[in-house]
Image 1 (cartoon, rainbow, N blue to C red):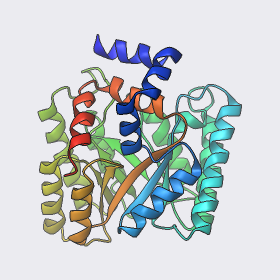
Image 2: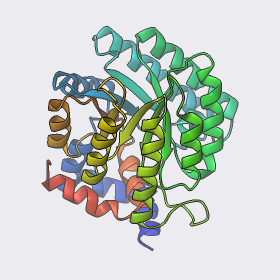
Image 3: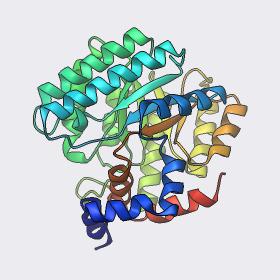
Image 4: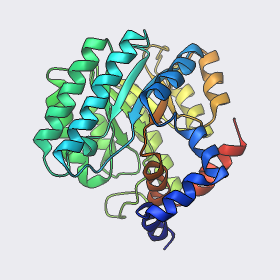
Length: 306
């Protein structure tokens, strides 16, 4: 019921105006989104890189329904990559791309062509691209596009979601030499037939998947804010003798910045996921709708920097 209410609110222009003008909302947006424009993204990236963090930037927007919108999203990434390179922010800064924002839902070939153009621009800028993962219905399509892109751009990163029952198998397939894989828990509402439903089951799956990636020949990217999983990641790095150049932690912009700083101080590579763009309202509302428990998560994050 709560998820339905949030989704309905995400489509209401009246609710958007109300939320956009609320003082609390402005605090949330400032905390979790770099800003609405490319200049905001560059400013935040400079600050993060100056603090010793790596960055992956996400131009907000997904579920594109027209070729024109998909092309505009592609062009924004091309512009961003040129500016990042000119500012000397690459290779510390890379970009994260949702294929649904590039046309995946109505034309997979168009999405591939747009993603390929972004990968080529990233390569020219001296950095990389990671393909974000969305709900389970797009997993096979996203991995197919990834395989095609890696033929020309082998550093293209994948994202796997520990709450999906298939992910251990996908980890084994992708834990190969040079393969960059971001492991996250997953936040979409998925049926029990394809996804674990309890937090305990998801955490156990995350650890199993982490062990597969950390024992493999690829480059694991552990995306989590969970203190227990971070501690296990540190332990697994020691166990598998992985140095700071052979894996990294990833966290969202505005979440546990003191912990990000601590990990950097311990010599770990930490990458901040930095969203920006005018679609911040839809972004935040969809994150809440995907898992309404995120309401409490964002609330705790606002009052805690640890």
